[in-house]
Image (cartoon, rainbow, N blue to C red):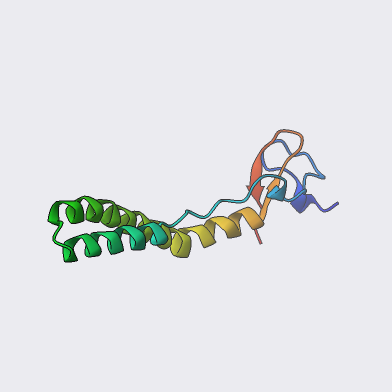
Length: 103
């Protein structure tokens, strides 16, 4: 086996099982559906004259929107880099060190 597959921490060769033996980085869940449901109930309550009830349902809708936006940004900007690093990563079975090979 080529020396490029030697573990940078312990120097052990033959340490090239892909890090896919461990779980890939997960994407974050969005709450778009929950936001839509709470938003619609809030609008319906406001339309029917229940302003307090509308306010109570609008708060979780705003929270779900904020969390969904953060999750979407993470999934579009950060997760691809983390997934690529995981995809190109290796795991030393001798010392447990995770590493990436340099081109």
